[in-house]
Image (tube, rainbow, N blue to C red; front, side, top):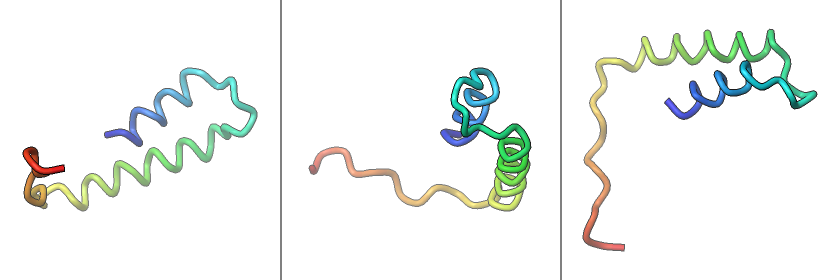
Length: 52
C-alpha cells in the first residue's frame, strides 16, 4: 500500500521535475498486477512486539 500511496501522491502533486506521468502510470499498473498475483499469500508471522 505504501507504494500505491506514493504513486497517487506523485500524480496529485507533480511538483518534482522527475515525475514522468507515463512512468508513474506504468508503475501503478505493474503494482496492481503484482497485487493480483500475490493476493492469496498470507502475511508471514507478525513482527515480535516484546523484544527489540
